[in-house]
Length: 182
Image 1 (cartoon, rainbow, N blue to C red):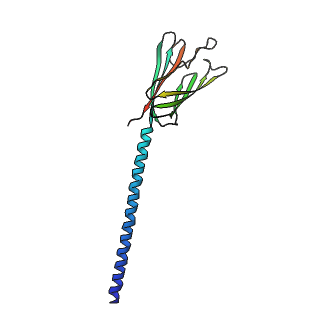
Image 2: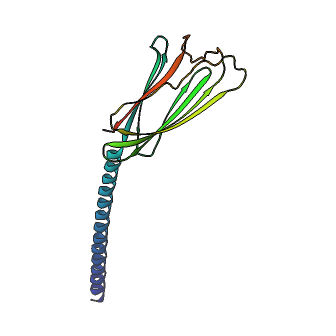
């Protein structure tokens, strides 16, 4: 009889242990489901705040009013995170960073920072370095055009932008920002 009581006691203890394990596991499952829901909400809020920046860069012959080179670029970002554009030519490098900041549901503040390095044609002499910094209040979908960023010849030296084109060239950037939609 003592063996039966002992095995009965062990069975009851095992049953209590299993029930407590299941109940604590159910709490963990509920917590995990809550965490998954919170994570899904966070991801949805992140995507709702995401932005798509479209940039069209072009090199224009200002005398002929003709586009001799173009590049389209689209990047996804969030408020406060920059998108960088880099244009490399034989003797010019242009780097531009565009950082949007939310002002309200339909308006942004766009911070544009630019750097330009211009070497003379034969690689001799000094490099010309220019910087720019601009902040613009914009509305979603509103096009912003930066022009000319460009390349007026210095002392008769024409910049070589790898276009096989002779003439006065300007770099133009057209940018617009819209909500990201997956």
